Length: 144
Image (cartoon, rainbow, N blue to C red):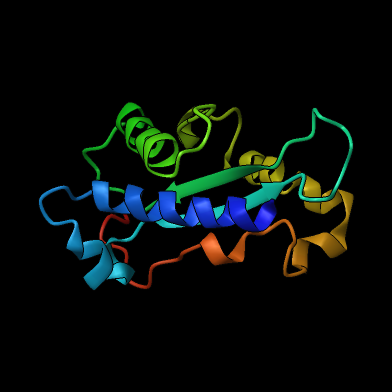
């Protein structure tokens, strides 16, 4: 299930990235180190369990986004990519870092809470970090 979830997320992130530049969607493909969004992804609850309350889900941090996009527009674009394009449930919660209580450090702490439960899980191939879906651009265009 985790493999399929990661594959679906990869598809959604590709669709999302292309929506950011609607008139020039090929920029994300041709110049990914400049135009593809910074993406840090963790995945939670990938251990097998019989607890139905424990579902596989992602925590995604995005950056290097066009400055004209507000949180609502980012939510709309990501929701479209995830729900419509990747055919996943529409249970998405979006929040700007500036709106997150306290700080970025608190958000990262929340994202990595599974890693704190089992430090070995943080660094295994199927661990907390979804390395395949993370992206750090080399020359981000929208950085301040």
